Length: 176
Image (cartoon, rainbow, N blue to C red; front, side, top):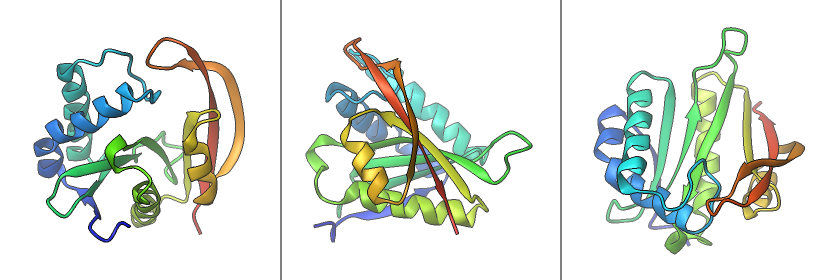
């Protein structure tokens, strides 16, 4: 199913050049109900400002940005690793903004992004990864299948894009 999809890490220049396409994916996911820090309606300028900040973080080596592209180079999905952590946690990274455009779902793209994130984390010397996700959402199953361990959930931790409360479940993964 994903033979025509390539997952790769973007460098700073590629991240900056990809801001409009990444904004498209973010806007689509928020419109589809994903609780990923943004509320409806998500204006394009706000989505692009977010991705410019991510690109700046890539340039400073604070973040790793991965994308899944189709055979024509269109971005279908993305995930980030936040590499910069406090001094007492140099071995840890946070997984953030796992996003797959609704038109590209159910093709194994998220699983491919998760496998690639493990490789990048190892290459960066990270052995503990953490993430949070909406309690009861499809992503919980994805993370469990990818070997992540559930820590617990906090009710009413965040809001869905429409303003309704949602719980958040925390996960970790040790890389060997």
